[in-house]
Amino acid sequence: MVASGKLRLLGLSGWLLLPLVTALTAPQPVLAQQQKPTLPANNQLAPTSIEPDELRPLNQDSSLLSIAGGQRLVADANTAITARNYDLAVKKLQDARQIFSQLSNFAQQLSTSFSGIDSRVAEASRTKALETAKMRDDATYQLASVHKLQNQSLLSIPLLVQVIRSQTPNGELGKKSYDLLQQVGFDKQSYPNLLAEATNAVSANNYPLAIKKFQEARQVFNQLSNFYQQLSASFSGIDNPISEANRSKALETAQMRDDATYQLALAHRAQNQPELSLPLLIQIIRSQNPGRDLGQKAYQQLMEMGFVDNPTNPSNTPNSFIATGQRLVADANTAITAKNYDLAVKKFQEARQVFNQLSNFHQQLSTSFAGVDNRVSEANRLKALDTAQMRDDATYQLASVHKLQNQSLLSIPLLVQVIRSQNPTRDLGKKSYDLLQQLGFDKESYPNLLGEASNAISANNYPLAITKFQEARQVFNQLSNFYQQLAASFSGIDNKVSEVNRTKALETAQIRDDATYQLALVHRAQNEPELSVPLLIQVIRSQNPGRDLGRKAYQQLIEVGFVDNPANADRSMPNSAAVTGR
Image (tube, rainbow, N blue to C red; front, side, top):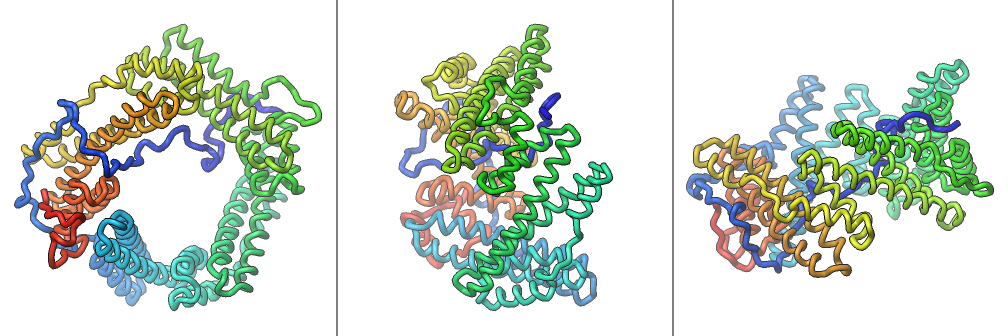
């Protein structure tokens, strides 16, 4: 049986769909040794009308994002438990867990940022991270206990495993959690015989029911395998018999998951849905090892579907999955001829996704067979490269269509992707860089979002200011990432181009951080310190606490009460610098 029709993009498992590019929202740090760049005139930071005396220090205890805020939620939960209002108790404890987890993460980030710069601040933040993590784990244990009172033991299990992993099994809370885990019947938990129900449905030719049951079985056994594996790791070196028992159970339940996955793939194939079978079979090969029985059976299925060649009888004919992508490209070119650019964009987008999925699948197979059957590994490596080339060709064509639509801003990330993938010295990489320059990537005029935000502040229109600062952060973060990617692509090939783009990456990252800092000030002016805190910590992580903007951001954290105000503020700051909040 071979694939027919368009490859069902949404049917492919999300964890297999590897991203084409680095996430655009990931902040890139500004190098500490870099001097603050001179910014283009239209991007100069307009002076904000917010002055220090207008940003009154806020008592962070009044905010939910504080230890006191989390403790209030825990107290509310205990009151609800006493009243047997378990639903309310669950909600309060879930909120408390989230707050304590955020506080712990923020404190840990500060500790890392100040490490080697101000050891006193680093140690204080590390201690706070541990304290709030303990509060999170206490709330987690209480939440698991409430679920037990609700006769919802299955909800307790993952919570208790989390506590054991965090606290270690030999700590008091870890011991209590393991005891409760045994009380709720984790080892004796009776799960529905989903595999038998699915098999009966197959026998009755009720494939929709069979698929539903196999999917449920996969999820159950995957969760169980993960829980057992986590417990095994937690007890390793503390109680090795328990560790080994859980490791064996992790392997057993993983085998059940893979059996269910294989049967699910067969059910999809029986319904003439090979595009849904494909990612499932590859998951099995990755999990089982191609040399094991189930891994061999899964690869045999891939050969029968025409996704891979039979090693003893290789074919030079493109498989039907590749043909699906090629048909989409042909449809797109037909649409271009008819000047139906919207349809062309849709077809190219689908083709890119198909080729990207196929390239990832072949790469995973190549890795799985490396050292097991190098002939199969190499064949899949070559197919991964071929389909990646098809993806990049479709990506370049899509960028060209956006140019025809006068939507150059949509072309830029696509062309950067191609340059990263192809290498700037190859034909398609050169064409992409040429088109990038034609589009005026270096001369692109962006709205003066920071100026508009400052004007909104002057008019006391804080909602508009927030919108403009958020837009500015996103724009300049994307630009910084694009420049950084180009710098990396040209490194060692054309170092002059690489250095120019590296400098621009730093400049735009600086603008992003300035926008982030001002956005935090606006939230503070609106008495929303819980929204300011994560922004200020982002600035500190990116800028380095020893730089001016990093110091100002830390001063803001002191003023909103998120970190303690030392007896001598000057001595507490990096480089003994006096800092004034803005």
